[in-house]
Image (cartoon, rainbow, N blue to C red; front, side, top):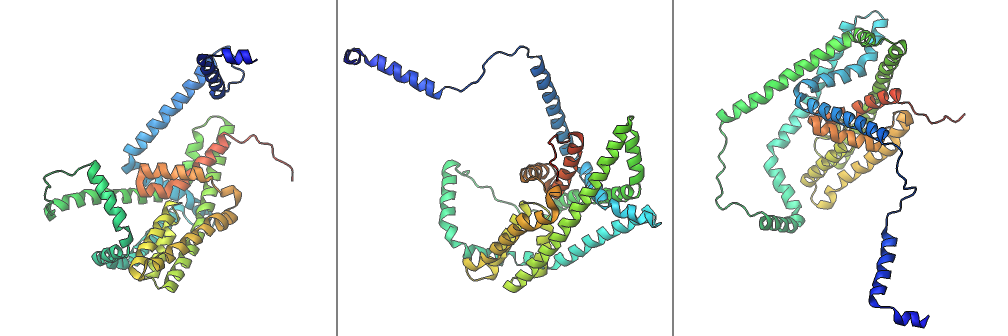
Amino acid sequence: MCAGIITSTPEMVLDFIRAQAEKRYALCINDARPVTSVDSIWASAAQVAIIGMFVMLLGAVLYVCRPLLLPIFTALVIGTTLGPLVMRASRYGISPWLSALLLTLAIVSAFGLLLTLLAAPLAEWLGRAPQIMASIKEKLYVFDRPLAAWRELQDALMPPAGNAVAVETPKITAVAPVVVEFVTPAVAQVVLFLATLIFFLATQGNFRRYLVSLFDDRDAKLRCLRIAHDVEHNLAAYVAVVTGINVALGTVVAAGAWALGLPSPLTLGIVAALLNYIPYIGPACMALILFAIGLVTFPSLGYALLPPACFVALTTVEGHLITPAILGKRLTLNPLAVLLSLAFWTWLWGPMGAFLAVPLSIIGLVIFNHLFPSDDPKLPG
């Protein structure tokens, strides 16, 4: 044995170490046998490619046709949510057209009331914007040195241009076309939304019968009716429960803002209730708003952190305990699915897409569960 060790050369030792390393870091492959046929693999790859191309084309169409499709989709989602009210009113002899007009008028009135309540406080805060920014900058002096270091690093990596171009104040003649260009499509979209909502609420029975008539098979017709009923039921239940929870949350936020001495507590409660319709992003924005108002209202940074900290604790309890307990497992969505849907629809349609993300997820999940039911066995009891 000693002779074997003595006769070993450095090259042999290196080869041995290299062989051990290759064995250690080699891929672990079990049953590495060639497949008998690749036809099924290519068929599956072709199906995936076709579905992928369809999804990309659908996304492109939704993005390009956003000015037309956004008000229509919004009206269809709201109309589906309010559909049970129109059907229930028709059982008592009330015309669907009258119910549709009254519900649309109620939505417009509620929106106008919210604008009335929010207009005065927002105008006051916007008028005090310079003083508010100066106060916030004074409170956040601890971040001056990190921000200065960041600017120095940015200037070192991307030096500014040598000759700075003077910024010319825009004239009213240049601003007016931009304002008109923004307002005109917005008014057209609002009119399209209201018209679509009224016609869909009034003729949803005819629309459902027409949709069912597109299928020839009896089972397909029944499946279409079940999908439409489940979408309507789940969407109405979800929106009703979440609206009640958001109203309660806004009430608690308004009371807490009044107790802590924050200005315009009613406005803060309304904003908190509206933003809570958007998962994750809405509560985060509300926490930042409370933090900014706290910086202006309270004398120190520690006191300014108290309102957003209380709000984060409240939304944590609401999101993890109260809402799941009220909705139950039937209407509780996967957090990852909600996050991906929120990111996709926000990127596609902006803030309105963020409001529609969860309702569209519910519609998609209902359709998916009908078309691809789960095969898991149900345990008795």
